[in-house]
Amino acid sequence: ASPDAFNYRPILGGPPALPGNPSTTAQAGAYVSFDTRRDRAVEVRVGVSFVSVAGARANLRESAGATVAAVRARARRTWRRTLDAVHVDGGRRDDRRMFATALYHALLEPSVFSDRDGRYRGMDGRIHRAGRGAHYTDVSGWDVYRGQLQLVAMLDPARAAAIAASLVDDARQSGCLPRWPFAGHQTNVMVGDPSSPIIASTYAFGARAFDARAALRAMVRGARKPCHTRDGDYTEREALSDVLRLGYVPHDLNVGVAAHTIGARDQPWGDVSTTLEYAIADFAISRLARELGDDATARAFAARARDWRLLVDPATRTIAPRLADGAFAPAPGPSSDDGYVEGSLAQYAWLVPQDPAGLFASMGGRAAARARLDALFAGLNGGPRSPVAFLSNEPTLGTPWLYDWLGAPQRAQAVVRRALLQLYRPTPAGMPGNDDGGAMSAWWVFGALGFYPAVPGTDLLALGSPLFPRATIRLPRGTLALDAPRAARGRPYVRRLRVGGREHGAPWLRFADIAGGGTLHWDLGSTPSSWGSSRAAAPPSFP
Image (tube, rainbow, N blue to C red):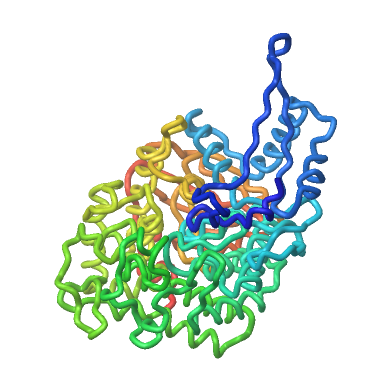
């Protein structure tokens, strides 16, 4: 049946009940039966379209005349070409299997939503045609802006640009940039304004075949004026009026996850987390504006990106809930999740990737920050209500790499290596948590390669150590060789690094410096070294 006949809406909102039928599940279905007494093998081809039955039939023709075996073989060839963009050698077989699995998972989503002819049903309910490439949906925004989309942009910039263009089209059709577009609709899943760092990071990593100026206009529009769309009953930046007045989301407005997702449409879940996410989004806007030559917008949003400081409680030197009258809520303990999304006060104390130096200063200096970070990594996976790290979920994915800013890159190398080997396995139950559109898998891929996109909206790569003796990455402009002859599970520590044959003493690079290919050569050991530990070698902060 044609889906438009039922005015289908995504699962969280539920479709409208048809007359006389109170069901809130999908209003279409069918079944077929086969006589398998003589031949038990049944091969079925399915065509799906969100545009029309004719579109579904046209999509079905993609597999016309092919057997299941032929379609499977074609899919395997396609995936082999895709996965061969990154090749690792040496090390343990299970680690190579884990790498291949993680890379595959990291590239599965977002989903193509358009038909073979480029047509798709937009968020305004009308039929549109994708410009370059396909139109994408199912973008797990809160998760994938922390690394998965950067990986896609590195390996397949055309696809990354099409994903960014899809988000801009969603905003054009519905009025607001999406947070978690699902099946071509808006949803209130998770928090923040992740389309902004997704788009800015995509551009920073060289995927630029989309209308970046239209993207910037949409980003600025959603950040300067409350934006609500009837599609999905969705608000882009909840409590924005209060944020524009106070600089932060007041704790008075905080609601639970259920009320946020399916109930109160302009009340935030996790006021502290949401404030920090908005600061990251504002920083991303400032970076894209700077790249596009819009200096006034860049300056304005760089200033807004500092608003996280308004939540630093001077009594505890930590980021904490604050009320609308300016008072801080009674001091919560490090395990408190009141005001935090899928995490605790101890875990969210570090979510300022745009300005680590400023964050350390707010904690009382680098020595105090180092002590607190060491305490956080007394555990790797304590859960969302814990005083230690929770590396099976996104809020602390970037936290180990902060050691590069603290003059202790050897600690980043050790923590990341422990997490790679202890939290993940190449087995059916080998993921420590929800992969969230490939976000967790992309983190594993980056960690095993020895670098990570630690500052959303930029192309800055925090450096660690590779797990494998040899790896090659086929980039659009050249091949990048990662050479670490002594690499092994028990040798995570960098003793020396050469980039393009030259000594490199800083624990960071820009992707632009290696986008054309070249060689990174690591000398690794089993004991910590002082490589990259000087204060002058620290990656930049963006205050």
